[in-house]
Length: 209
Image (tube, rainbow, N blue to C red; front, side, top):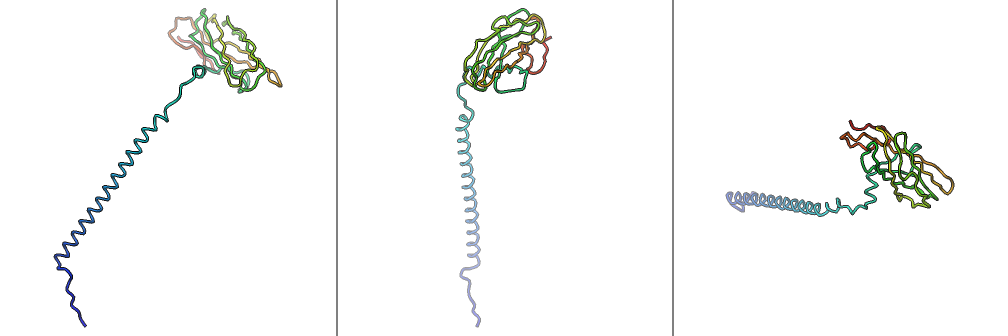
């Protein structure tokens, strides 16, 4: 048996419906894409804003203690023995050494462990005189890690690379030791325009020309 079924809609109407559905699908896809882009843009703005709010906290730092700042500007004296954290000596010259003129040298002795007693003596090399502070007072049981501040005055008697020898005598609970440090200094006649004041720790240097 043969059935002749008529289309539910005329051909033209079916074509219009198909075109309408296609346009609606395109509009829906476009709208979805637009919503996605707006969402991504919103997330980017939020992340950017959060990053801006957090950046000051990441770079901010509290006030620095003046003693810590001064210590950071000092140079380590050269130890004559094996490097050790038991005792450290740092120094800084207040001005450029000139022949015949006194120069103050600020020092910081840092104990790395418990000591019963510690003191230091200073002696200049040939051509350099320690005029003030050749020996520190004896410090009983200094706190570990706390710098012991001291100042000496030196007078260069000639140009060139000179040095101050610092002998640190420390009494531990089980032994007594002596650590020797060298403080290198460069002195000139005062006519040079250079500002070199201290020879590099562990090496030699030359004065200004």
